[in-house]
Length: 148
Image (cartoon, rainbow, N blue to C red):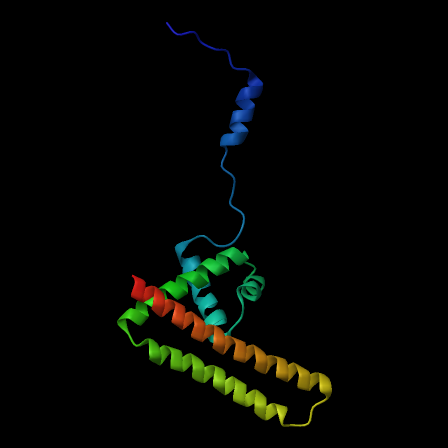
């Protein structure tokens, strides 16, 4: 017969503390909440152009969660691109950026104080950077699709 090893009450108490489930801290975890959050992330990132950090601050969700959501959308878009016309989507995004850029350039032609002119120039530069990032992303995604 095996020998029974006595267990101290302190060991039992420690084990109870270690095995109790703790309530998760952080953002929504349900499927519906995740779906709604991802829809908002899509809108804020792809349609408006906010960064993951800005979106995480706006939605009060961990930045990593937002980055995972953005990766989800990139993956979904890549699959859609295989089935549909990637050029049409890219053209739509480019047209949106060009419209924003044109509006800012028109506004820059109006009289402004130096600080306002500098802010407008900064916004134009940011749009130009977004255009470049989209072209790089499209090229990377197309390359990944070819490799698969």
